[in-house]
Image (cartoon, rainbow, N blue to C red):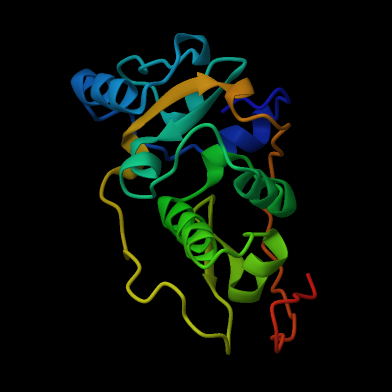
Length: 195
């Protein structure tokens, strides 16, 4: 999964167990057509046997579930870029459950005419890593805003494609397989977050 920086050893270790491609070209073509990706984004359907870790240089892997379950859209919002920058991981390392939580939070804020910001997101969520992919868990002692989150995604790692890295206009970090420290912020009494 290319980001402009190459971290071969970390990438190989982190993605050694990724399953190969398992979704149809027709489903990919339908996604691209329905979301109206412009040609200059360079979307590519993977070759047989490739995994999400096989993005060519200058490309990044995206997953079908981001769009069809997580309601992710390109061009990326400023808030979403802020999440990637703050938590220091690239989009290819996000679990679809994390995508659902980020997008849900953004929708809730916009519905209430509140600007979604990373500090506000921090009030409700804490980063979590499982099997090399990042998501978010409910912060203790705060009110739930996503009452019935989807618990699992079947075969999501096999439904991926490649797109030019410049489509996401930031230099994404490769976090590696380090442990995620527990954040110990006090729950604020208002919308101001200590993060």
